Figure 1: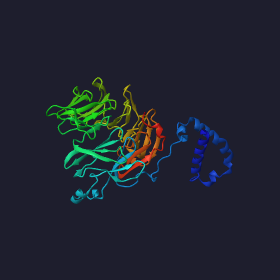
Figure 2: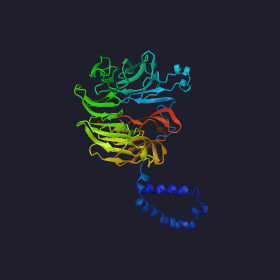
Figure 3: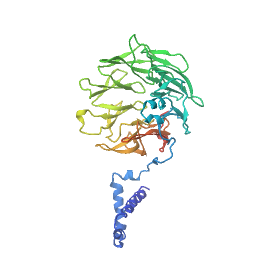
Figure 4: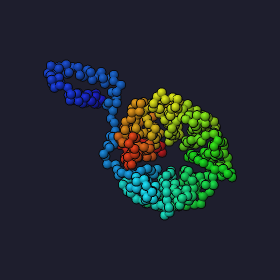
Length: 451
């Protein structure tokens, strides 16, 4: 079958040659005996020796066409968010007044004053139930509970920073409550919302019940930011310039906390899902354009690895065994225009270089064995190919090009691998203001999260 495919491939190439070859060449009867003898030999040699032979005959999945009927092809739709149980989609619509840029349009623009929802198997545009108050910046930050039954939205309600909770467990969403809070929050595994209160404490709230203190801080102290792992480990920042401190605690014993990082500059940090690792990046005070990035083992609170350069869009894999990141070269090291993409094995500490092809807009697939990303760099000078691509981590092989429509921010794959969601983008001409929800043309079982 492979030889047949190879013959068909070269037959196609030969037919294309006929488009520009003089007819006297390919129709000349004198060449026929030689072609009959030499062509099979040449094909055999190429099929055996060519390093591209396997790729040429591989059965690639169907690519999603740019004019294909998508679930949401309508223009001026933004910021799609799919529930983890893959039942609901929440998004916003760009108001016609958002492009006017005058005082009147500011009051009439509803882009960030309301949101819409749809069932995933429909193409609906239904207004999300929100408080009947003065609203602004609705959904500037949002997060689903892990089972997809609740959605937390940040908003300004009557000029106060607040959180809105919506119940999606029924046949249609229902407004549960809203309350004043900072726009820093995360869901626990048990559907309790952790959020930063104006008092400085980290509060815990089960929808419909009274809040309680999860992490109580001293007078005058305030948690400026925090991260939460599935096992209940919490990292939070205290202090102010020039002294920032990151502490570690756990929801099972919040009174016990450990200082594991301190810096003069404001740190950026993430935590792995299992709570074992933290990645912390800070600028250097004497050289603000230079960054220091360190990987901490939270079991021992010591530096596990220090990376030579600053990295951006770092993401732990779903099983917390790997760290994917795009390198960001320091100003003095711009010998190579395009930085490389790496995957770090957190057990062996071996880093694997995948070259400059994978752009910074990437996500892990749910199985943790692939990377889905937008815009492939084809040359280190900055030449890009439009589209969304899937790369296998084990060998760096491109599994598929899903579509020729690029994404900004990064495309995502649903937990079961059944859907791919992204917001359309043209890197140079600006956002397309359209998002897409499509069924994965690949075998979704290959990418689904482990049960």
